[in-house]
Image 1: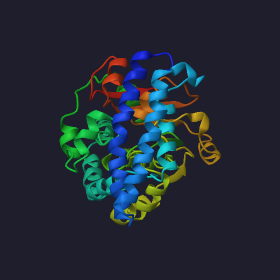
Image 2: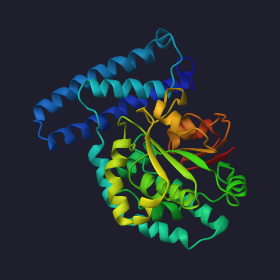
Image 3: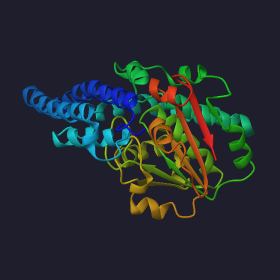
Image 4: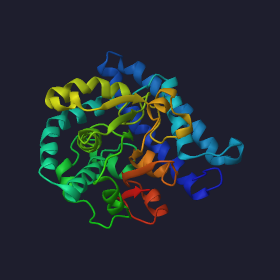
Length: 333
């Protein structure tokens, strides 16, 4: 969506960001206090951030033509995170991510064992459904953020059991199964999304399935923090605990690589040289999550197979895709 010319989308997203910044600053202040900063100083920084943020976004709302360039949701993400970082709020959701990871990690072995009890198409379907269920933990979308902000979000198993039945809003699952059940890609690149159940019970379980069949997996994670997305540093920090819980992960061909980026959407023109080099020869790219897989790159064309997996958790995105909130997307080309 080009927000410089799309009035409906511009009004919707700017107002969403103006409201959502309060959630981020609230969590950012709490995180700062837990790390020893005084309440007065943390609130002073938050107020400075709030003022600059409001001025920047209100200015765009009132005079979109003044931006001079195409403005997308990714642009707004970049504006938001740049302003937050300038005022010292680098990782507002650091404690929220840690809490969800702690709550979810003990379930990893149970979910993997459950997947292993399936075979063939049923097994791959269980994995894809797990990705959808995990992707509900998204603090950048209103419909899902409201479920997790108080720490009592729905369980992974509850979410998975209540997924919309097939056919999903975009449903290329049969094509995916036909392509990769009988053989395996030599290498795949998997762009991970959120912390908690999204990473540990969704993405990681899918990567385990491919890697266990001999596929070299490049796990691509953000370099810089944004919302509740897993950064490459978050992954490296929790990886020893994953291996400690399930030693098989130590022997799987999974490589953790930084995308070099730091937003919930991604422009693939801007990824790191490291990721470009690691991706050479890939036969499958997986773009997971509403930001990377739907709001950006839904219609991107690759010279290899591409899979977009996401649960839609935003009203406008759902409408623009011809669906409703909590619809699922499985696009395979």
